[in-house]
Image (tube, rainbow, N blue to C red; front, side, top):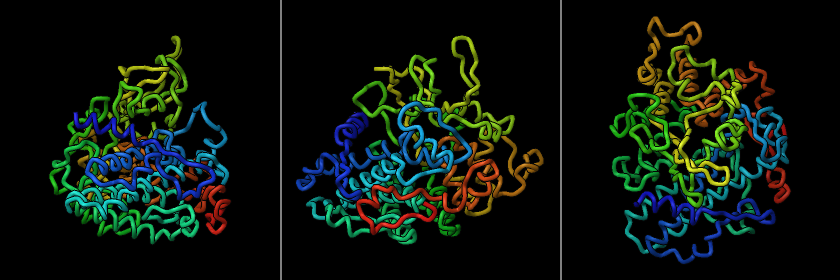
Length: 471
């Protein structure tokens, strides 16, 4: 019951509002008028839930992290009939324009999410509540803020760094901070979160951030910054915590009733079957744009032949992750699409399946693969391959002709293990392989296009904000 109440509360307080006349930093939730009245734990729990609700937008199947990691990589293509088609294809084609409406929406989404965390951090300081509760709330908000800024700095590089709620007038004085300063704030937030958050086994409300979640994200940040020593240290703490383990079979990870397993490090909670609750949209969004299942799929993140062919012939993960096509009126259509979030028994309302599948932002297989990346020790990677019943790196049967080095083995393993889980483009950027890999596959990519443009409307609102090189 606590979990259900928690998810429904998300739905009630997670609605956000914005206006084109507002500064991009003055993006307040509709519930903001009550912010000055935060006094009790119940008041703060509502605000905390609103902050977590921002995950539904940022990790939406058609959100910023999906478009970047799948559409801009070699994993997926889009066959989606809704929205402005030209703006959607610009991601896949590396032809992003400063006036792209989706880029502006994604920018707003992040600053709305950051505002929701900042308002709680601002109000909790003066609250007459016990110190341990206040520290726990602060740690959760710092984890979320660190997560959102990590994504933003991947997408835009230098971004305005905001750590307190601002008035519209104040916001015009905030310009883009260098990436180094943004990363310093991310590390500061995540170190505090890792110190104050409980272990996963002590979490009583599903979906709340844990110590392991903060440490895992911090490890990813250190790897992004090239600090493998620091990454190895913090990721080994996660590894040695005995809080997480791989499930016996890859197929055990997926399904509408599979939630918050031992492999899950940080997971977004959904509640299917109720149109007024935050039901999961990945199932519908990732199915082909056809009504062969009784509803029209969104056609988002349709799988490329290149990703399909990345799997080894005997890899069972492919058939769990990707369908080779579908039958329509007796005709087989060879259009590959993701099936990890399938919910065939979902209640349908108004042509929408109200799916129940959660979404894992961080999971233990990711921790293991990052540990091999940080340490150069294939032992961790081989645990992932053993679960898939595949030859270990270093064994004679391993496909070493194709993946001759450990770096290439990691790249391959991350791609097939984490397929369509919003990881690929950031992975290629982190290892400085994006231009090499994607240009060889016909992408019009160069170093300048490893960042998105700052939305033109933002620069119209404040001409002192600079644009990224190449736009």
